[in-house]
Each structure stands twice: as structure tokens, then as C-alpha cells.
Image 1 (cartoon, rainbow, N blue to C red):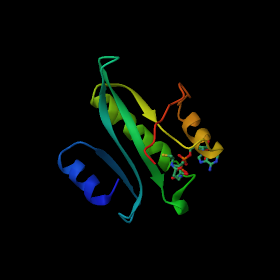
Image 2 (image 1 turned 180 degrees about the vertical axis):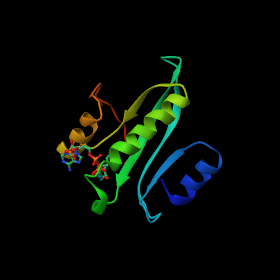
Image 3 (image 1 turned 30 degrees about the vertical axis):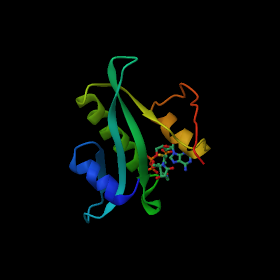
Image 4 (image 1 turned 135 degrees about the horizontal axis):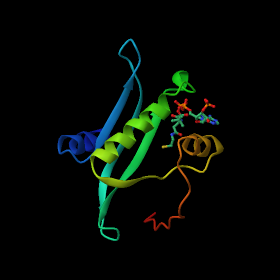
Length: 113
Ligand SMILES: CC(C)(COP(=O)(O)OP(=O)(O)OC[C@H]1O[C@@H](n2cnc3c(N)ncnc32)[C@H](O)[C@@H]1OP(=O)(O)O)[C@@H](O)C(=O)NCCC(=O)NCCS
């Protein structure tokens, strides 16, 4: 998503962005996503689009803290679960597994290019 597009979504309250700051108030990580209503379950799910921690700040629990905040946010939005589309890399799978996430389905995709 382009920055202007994302800014417009934030303006319209269509996206949730959580930012982690260090003690010097420098941004060192973020999580972005949105609550999406799923007719099949008649409930909302929280789609976590991106979670990033600056490389020099990794393995200090910041990603885990961001995920905890995402969980609180999703709960406050009455979502019944949180879903992540992640690249199948060992590091990423380990990170989400350590936070209690489990693989639950394969996804099908149709691309236009
Ligand atoms: C994945 C990412 C968000 C993790 O952030 P982080 O702040 O380093 O994570 P944490 O310190 O909270 O790690 C918690 C646990 O996850 C696991 N973990 C995290 N990074 C790992 C790695 N590179 N290799 C193996 N396990 C890892 C470990 O179990 C870790 O606990 P430990 O440090 O006590 O062993 C960060 O590496 C990142 O931004 N990567 C690039 C972007 C990305 O891939 N995002 C995810 C897809 S949306």
C-alpha cells in the first residue's frame, strides 16, 4: 500500500497502526492491520497486514509487545481472532509460534499479472 493510500485509510479510521518507540522517542517498530467483518462467521476478524521491528532492536521482546497490543486492540474491536499472512520462513514462524499463533489453513490466490 502506498503511503498516501495508507494515510487516507488512517484518516477514515479504516486501518489501525501501532508504533513502538524507544526511550529517546524514536520509532523502532510498527504493526498495521484492520478489523474485517466475515459474513461466514457473522463476526469480525483482525487482519494483521504487517509487523516490523527495526533490525538493531530485534530479539528484545518488542515484536512480542506489539503483538500483545494488537491482541488487546483486536479484543477491544470485538474480533474473534487475529489472522496473519506471513512468508513461510523459519524465523517468522518461530516468532508467531512463540506468541501462540498456529497455522490454520492454506490460502488460494488469483493474480492478475
Ligand atoms: C519477526 C520480527 C517482527 C520479530 O521481532 P522481534 O522484536 O525481534 O521479536 P521478539 O524479540 O519479540 O522475539 C520473540 C520470540 O520470537 C522468536 N524469534 C524472533 N525472531 C527470531 C529469529 N530471527 N529466529 C528465530 N526465532 C525468532 C524467538 O522465540 C523469540 O524469543 P527469544 O528471543 O527469547 O528466543 C522481526 O524480526 C522483523 O521485523 N522482521 C522483519 C519483518 C517481518 O518478517 N515481519 C513478520 C511478517 S509480517
